[in-house]
Length: 461
Image (cartoon, rainbow, N blue to C red; front, side, top):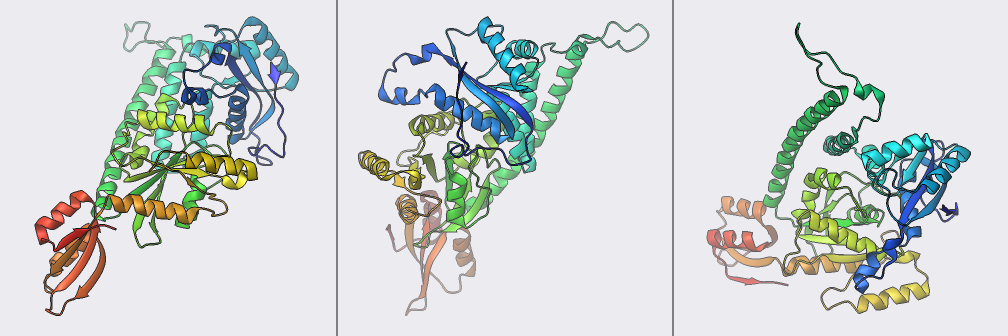
């Protein structure tokens, strides 16, 4: 195994004092076949270096306060069906586990149930694969009832696939019912049935949550404020940016998956437009399919958003690969980019760049296609946030219609309807006693407004 040591000063993901949950060894298997040249530059960017993948695996382990004793990269010529790694590496790692007195081995890859069982026997330690590790983190981060249910659903789906007679008690049989009962079902069948029953109950509860969330979204649609959703790779700085823009106090820490449950806040932009800002769970490469499915209800805030801000950490060496991972998850969620509604790319953490690196990033931003220039910001220092707010207003205003209306001053019901369904910008009493009102709304609502009131003219700004 090729060891990789971490500088305590540069490692931003060190566990908190007194919170250690176990001594762990982190291993990043690396298939040599991954070294084949990529077909194009964008695909090449998606190929992370083994060191970068190991850094992320260590960060994930430390996110649940595991004390990472040592870590390293294991080059592999092929994946062994029984143990994932070859016999030589199996014995080498067994020696390291014993020497370091590690109770947990984290594998930065997905393991089959059989592979996990065999590795635990060979190393006499608990083995966590990438999926299990992410589930552990999500289990700790869930704060709301919905988040807890979604994590439990993903956990149970994962556990169901792990019931492979790993323990002897699963081989016992329970007697049948009645005097002439047969051999009954095995313990493994009982465990699987109990898991399936619990999954069914959770899915029923989540359906209720989903209906409630839809009611909330429908009520927000009646309040005529556009929704702006923040998405991005985990630890890209979404929550820090959210706090800056909304003056909220959402947990923002330099760690993986600091935020899990969605948060929404009303934000007034400089030119007076009010928006609903939504902070969402961060994405990650190889995000387990069961988690994408489980968190679909949460991420529907993104699906329903009028504008998506894709927050990227431009100081990270794998920024391009991370961006591709986010796009892949959005695609999995069925979020198709609508015409003229491309996400705004927010290149965050420019405060971490030195002068030369900053100049290179600005040059790269300028070379982006017209209309798709990213906004460069530092959520920590506040640099670039005025430009971001202006870009958000420009994008939203381009898709919203402004109507000049004339109402009878006695039409209280009509005025109330406008306040409920549109954004009332100005009101003024005309010389003839009528009320001149300027409202702003989305195109669909604009048609309803025109049909109800008529209008003097339409314009945009």
